[in-house]
Length: 146
Image (cartoon, rainbow, N blue to C red; front, side):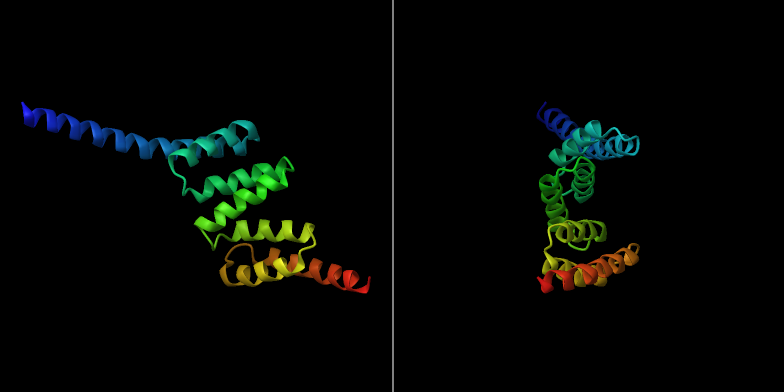
């Protein structure tokens, strides 16, 4: 009887662990579907649920930041970008989004620091860094003239 109880508990735990990992992936994928359909409220809910089950899911934080960017909630966008970069420091998309925020806030030293980091990790979005640096060159001398 003891063996049957142990086997039942083991089977139950194995089943729940597999459901847990599958459930988390489903939340992210469902959130991505909602995001692509521009249903941002439902997407946000799904990404938040994904984070509840897997707090180290950098992609969910990144997509939450994208949603907050669309909704023009810069504070929440920044917080999610910071979380993304804590989990995945070389996420070029998160670095690029952070650079744009720093540029909007006229934090030129932060833009330069992020740009240096971005240059080391960029694979797909390297041209975007050049555009930001050109914008920075055009703005920075004007701020020094004042």
